[in-house]
Every structure is written in structure tokens, then in C-alpha cells.
Image 1: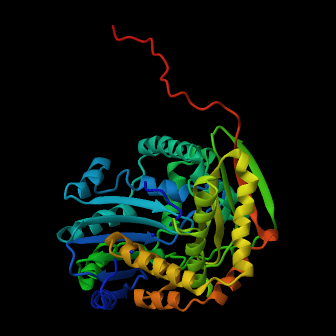
Image 2 (image 1 turned 60 degrees about the vertical axis):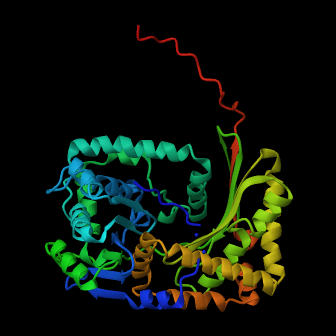
Image 3 (image 1 turned 135 degrees about the vertical axis):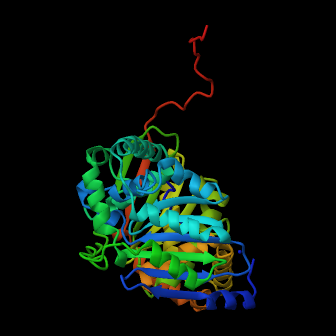
Amino acid sequence: MAKSLKSRSQARLSGTVLGRVAAAYRKSVLPNGLRIVTEEIPHVRSVSVGIWIDNGSRDESPDLNGISHFIEHMLFKGTTHRSVREIAESIESVGGYMNAFTGKEHTCYYARVLDEHLPLALDVLSDLVMNPTFPSRELEKEKGVVIEELKQTEDDPDDVIHDYFEKELFGAHALGYPVLGTEANIRAWNRRTVAEFRSRRYTASRIVVAAAGNLRHDAIVRLAEKAFRHIPTNGDPGPVARVPAPSAAGSSRRVFSRPIQQAHITMGTTGCSVMSEQRFPLMVLNTLLGDGMSSRLFQNIREKYGFAYTVYSFANMISDTGTVGAYIGTDTAHIDRCIGLIWDEFNRLVRTLVPRQELARTKEQLKGNMMLSLENIPNRMMRLGSAELYFGEFMSLDAMLRRIEAVTPDDLREVARSLFRPERFTTVIFKPNGAAAPSAKPERDDSSDD
């Protein structure tokens, strides 16, 4: 299914449109605790709907690491009402699309269709979530599929290095587990293990139905009431109780030798949570530091020195913690120089106030990115669902823009001072192992059909 990617995000919407869209947000809670959040956007012809589960890889034990993602796959492998093929054809036959993703704390099943097909989309998605059959034959086949996904990820060093980084940063805590799990775990699970985990976690109090587009909130509520009327309420554990996230224990540097042609470096530490007062200053700081071609890291390391094709900073935030740092891909000969240049930029933010002109430009970039992203209907649905699970309420775009505009140079320096401390930093390096680059010349195949 869709990868859970580390996120990175301009036309302005008129004040009239923004005001109308913000006013269209509504929320309802069913008697069983299931929540429904919608945003009515009447000037479009589509709807994006998602069923969110408050469960992710963070909520797994070591022997079950990866099972949330595996269940995400298996829900598409047959229900009591639809076969694998019928699931695949259901949404595509009306011109829509359907997918899913699993992250550290959430799983989401979503679809986008023309507004007239919203009942179908919600019916199919709720069928997946409520009525999976986990056929044994499909389960064994899907083990192979997910193991191939694992291998594909391992062959993508600029992606998988973030998993290695989080494992080093969080240690034995579940936040250090990879979302995809391990091959040994995947091979060990049986139908009973998978079904029991889903039944314990996919409960009404942990489900949010989020929808955005040309819709009517009351109609969505009626559809959800029908779709989830049989969800059991006995034994519902209520909101997720998670083991608190650890803080950065100390500095570390790990080097791994891999059959690659370029060195990859991820360096960072624990950051702030989505609930933190530092959230908006950190968003501005991350944009200024390493988001886009005008950022400090790009202009210095790529444009000035030519040491990298890809360099960026990241600031990921979840319920009680986050990660912040930088990534670069470079030649092995430039590893230490690049790490030094990144620290130069970190220290510059610690020691020197950001000029107001640069800060103003960065704010406009961040605000523009936000507004452009919200011209995408699926992005609006994603924002609705994640906001409900994290905050239990919705912050309007206007309110977010005001919070960004209020960030000062002193705010940025305070955040930089709290985060960019060498004694708290974890660095993970992938070094080429010296293997020859793959030949561009195809190998001779002497086989013949004659």
C-alpha cells in the first residue's frame, strides 16, 4: 500500500473562500464513541473520505512489530461481502481510487471519488475495516508481498536510513521499530494472531471517519451510523495509552557499510510534539534551514560547494515527541566536511538572530505551501483526520497562519538552542562498501526459445 513518507509541501485562496471553507467544518460523535469530522467544499465535484484508526507501529510489541502494516494489507484481501477482485474493482469502476497507509501512531484507509459515489466509497472502506476475513491462502501470499516491500525499502538507502536513525535514537522503545516490521516476524504470524490484533485495536473509540469535498455532514453521519452499527462496544479499551517517548539519551555515531555508490547521512535528535508551543517556531525554522532551493542548507552545501544533489532538514512531530535534523547524500570523501557544514548552519541559528527580511520570506514560503496543499481535497481530509486524533479539535487555516506570522527571531533562536546540542545528536552514516557500480551493459542471455 502507500508508503508512509517523511513529509516535506503556494497560489493564495481568497479570504472569502478561506472563510467559507473554515466555517464548513463539523464534528459529530456517535453513541458508540466513533467520531465523524467533515469539511464541506461545495465548489468541487469530488469527495475524499478516510477511515482512521488510532493505532500504528508504536503500539506494537517486539514480536508483533509490523503487524499494523500487515493488517493494512490484509484488509484488501477479502471481506464477508466482497472478494479480492470485487474490492479492487469497486472504486476504480467509478473512476475513483483507494489506498491505505500505516505510520507510527495511525493507520488510514482512504478513497477519492466523484461526490455522487460517496456512499459507495464509505461502504467499501467500512466493509474493509469491519468485515475482513483474513483468508489463510491470501495471508500466506501477502507475507511474500510485504517481505518484497521490505527488500525494496532496504534497496532505497535515502529512505531506509531514517528507520536506522530512529532505531538508534529511540533504542528499544517502540518508536524505534520500523513500520514495516521484520521478515522473521512476518513469517511467524498466523490468521489467529492477525485477526485478534485487529479486533483489539479497531474499536469505535479509536476510529475517526474524515471526509472533505462536496458533501453534507448529516448525510455522512447517517452513512457512518449504518456502516458501523454492528461494531462491538463491549470490551472497548477506550483511547490509546502509550508508553511515553524517551528523550535523547546522548550522542552516538553509527556507520553501516552497504552496496551503494553514494554515502548517506542522517543526523538529528528528539524534537517537539504536535502539542508543543514550539510547534510553529520549529515549522518556520525547518523551512528556513532545509526546505526548498532557497533554504540555507541547499544554498550552502549544494549551490556553494556542490557537495550534494539532495540535502534537506526535517521536523517530524507526533503526539508526545518528534525528530528533528538533516539528511544529505554525498561522496564518501565529503562525509566529514558535510557534517561540519550542517553543524555550521545549526550553530548559526543558535548564535545569531535570523534577519527579519529572511524570516518574512520564510514565513511567506511556509504559509504559501500550506495554502497550496489545501487546494488538494485529499490533503484536506488528511488534515481533518490527523487533527482529530491528535487534538480532538480542528484549527482553522487562518488560525495557523496567524501562529506562523507571530513567530519572532527570538523564538527561532530559543528553539535552535534547545535542539541543536551536539551531546544529544545521533548520526547514522551509510558508506559504500567498495563494490563496483552496476554495469550499464546488459548481461548476455544465451537462453533461446528455439
